[in-house]
Image (cartoon, rainbow, N blue to C red; front, top):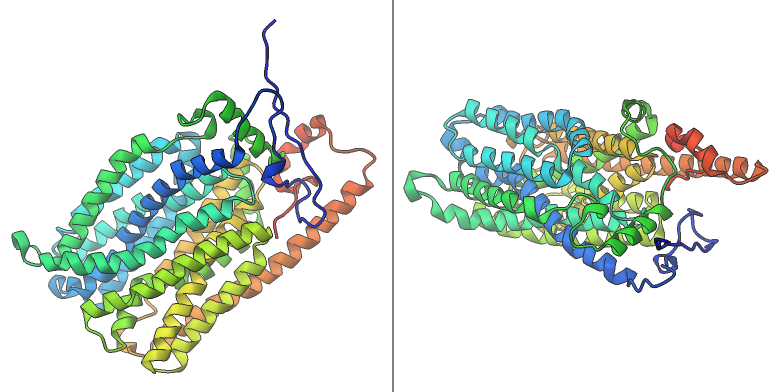
Length: 494
């Protein structure tokens, strides 16, 4: 008789936890001959996934925001751009970025992440190189359109992809590590642009052209390597053996929401018609718009403190370093506390305080402190809000589409960010700072509302489950699995 290994997952009750199905990772065990070290396995998975994904996002954020550095070194001057034309080139990227995020996630879900993500990265790297050769406003505008189309799939794609490898209260920390690359791009981008600009005149090209060309070449090289560096899902990962693959699937089963994992267009419709998804999307815009403002205009805001362009690039680095620290800390804290709402509220308040300091006074020291607080507050919101919205969708396709909706609506704020810091309002930028304060306040109130609403829904589900005369059976779950997160066994993350 053929021998089959059986993997058992033990669950222990933790009364103070929000999710009754959640168990500490130490409670996951393999009975029988298995000697798998779970912590070592998760650590190995982290090493194989997170650093490379972070590199991809670092280059993505660097490539979309380096136009601000290029402009500081003469882009608008040499292309004879007006302020409105420059703003249009910033905004058009986000318009097309938003349009292609949902289709991109659907393509990745239907195909293979290890092929789709490198392919779109290769495409935007080629576009970035081409941007170094534009001669006028029209050329730059078209290049930014194609950059938006090709970059659209990375952030929502990776955010969904990580949910297929990690449990519910492990995911925010990994997304925070991944997104911290955006803050590294802010810090590293300024320094890199400063160094590349020294090539001004080499081969007859301006320094700002070399910024686009060299950064695009690096992106193409990394995209090529990504075809070999990325994996699809745990059951096809080459760095896991057969026993480890089964163990990972057993761990993920602890957080299995019991909803359908099939590819049905009904779940796409469900994602678009779920009002909770749109609240999280609006909250994400409230979080991401100040981030884009910061990444696009931090060198300009720092230059307003009296520094030269080169010195402003260097002085804009420390706020990004602080933002990277707070982003990772917030991700770890949110997973550890198993809460999303309160973390979002606290950091949105910090961001609002930072922009208030920028708005209230023109004292250089106070403004520089405000830049630090603004960055430290708004950057951590991104992984917290996107993982919160993703946690509250039942079924993998709805989760993937909802994540793309949340991210795409958030990125629509990038269109707004391109216009709210016009040069004519320097050095105080009342409109820009005021709008960012309003967005941070919106995040505070929307996070408080969703915390209250979702907590109340969990209580109602608990009451209905307690009134049942028997636990949910496998047959009953199968009968109702297409209802997504409406089913009573699905509990919302607050």
